[in-house]
Image (cartoon, rainbow, N blue to C red; front, side, top):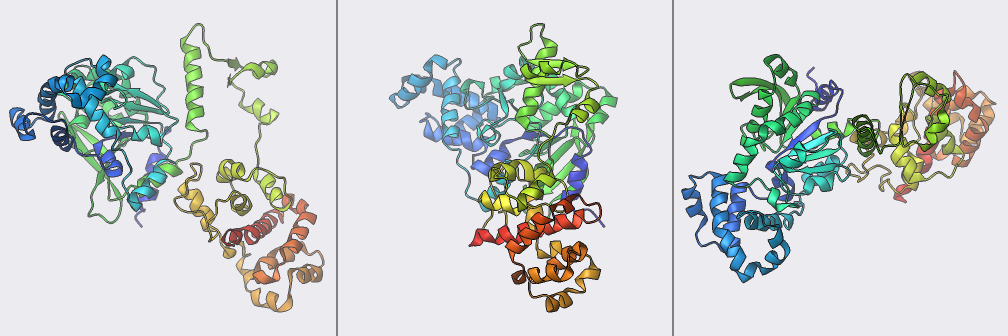
Amino acid sequence: MKEDFNSEFSKHISKFSTSPFLFIGSGFSRRYLGLPTWESLLIQQCKKLGLPKPYNYYKSNANSDLPKIASIIGNDFNGIWWSNDKFSESRTKFEDKAETKYSPLKYEISLSIDSGTELTDNEVNKEELNLLKKINIDGIITTNWDVFLENIFPDFNKFIGQEELIFSDLYSIGEIYKIHGCVSKPNSLVLTDEDYNGFEDRNQYLAAKLLTTFIENPVIFIGYSLDDKNIQLILKSIIKCLTKDKIEKLKDRLIFCQWDPKVTKTSIIDSTILISGTVLPIKLITLNSYVDVYTVLADNKRKLPIRVLRQMKGMVYDFVKSNSSKSKIYVADNLDNIEKLHNAEFVYGVGLKDKFAKVGIKGLELIDVLSDSIEDREWEPLQISKLCLPVLKGKYIPYFKHLYLAGLLNKDGKLDKNIDVDEFSPAFIERVNNVSINSFYPVKNYIKKRGEVNSTYSTFKELIKSLNSNHLHIIMYTPLLQNDKINLEDLNSYLVENKDLLKDSKLGTHFRKLICLYDFLKYKNKAGL
């Protein structure tokens, strides 16, 4: 049977030791912000800025070449901007930053984009964006000018334009590379014919800087067509840096998302793209919604938050690169001087894995959360819900107490699919919402006795009294009782009195299941009351 998209894409991503980079184009901003195409933007500016000639005049004089159109418009607008009272406020704010005759046009375009970045009111887009905030990626490369991405990923560092990229130390984690500039720095926009010529002249340096990203990370292209000039230019420059055998390393790393409103099911296939006579193998995803793609990326969990990983990598980079590092790093190959760790912000150990394991570095474990479900330890419900529950491993986990107390369950006792909690991956939400009373039933041999159990015992208290400490039968029969026969105070008393069974080699798993049943019955449906 053919795998569904989520399984196939997840398996493909898991082949790599690094998380993906996103390469994001203008289609992304059009989808979520309703921003115009480049040509539509120039048409709008012609009308808005009071240019002396209609847009078609500029278009015909530039042979329909958009960068040349922008150059001609910018040249005409320069004089208007410096003299017309309509732009007096703009001049007050920006005249000392106007570097070229095209700066006024770039400034007015930046104002226009920055004031028009409201989210499109679309339920599908809202679901996508909620997932997008949770995805796990190493970084983003974009040709977009707006600031939408940095708002979605506030922990990422931003680098604007080729200059910043070429002359900055990049860690390739938690970074956004705005290679065509940003509205926050209007002069950085790659807009005119002159800008593109300058971009192409320095493109080989940019490609060399990005080469490691393309060789080490899967790169997912969103918001571009396969024949997009910007993508062709970047890939062409990267190919120039590689020998023929090294180009083979790009195989499977280039993943293009192609939006098609007609498709009803997301799919992924092997395909190719032709760059300067070189055929590159790619993965081609065809979709009409990004929900599946973002779901897989959100379930692609990393061990530490991106800001922590970036800080660690930056400290090590600074320590290795500089003779007078400012980072408080302790490098050790034994634990004899462990008191030095108190003054360190980051510890790098060589051959210490086994020794640290013996010392014991430990957080909350499942057995702690199980115990808390029956004997309250007054933990902070929101912190337990966000930082502990999603990472616990095991078939039986008491989810509902802390989720309920943190106010995260809806009236049906479930997590909303679009809940705005970054730590909750789609897989975690599905796992919680799939818990039902059937999840606690014993094996089939016992389920057959359900009718007999309910006709024999009218309450849980009667059941434990009758079975006289036969814990195996008590644990197996209790889930079969009708819910209204289980007094939760009586069940809690039994669980507390016999909590040592949590560590019992034979009954431990079944006892954990009974604790989870108690958690389920007590808290799941409280949210709707």
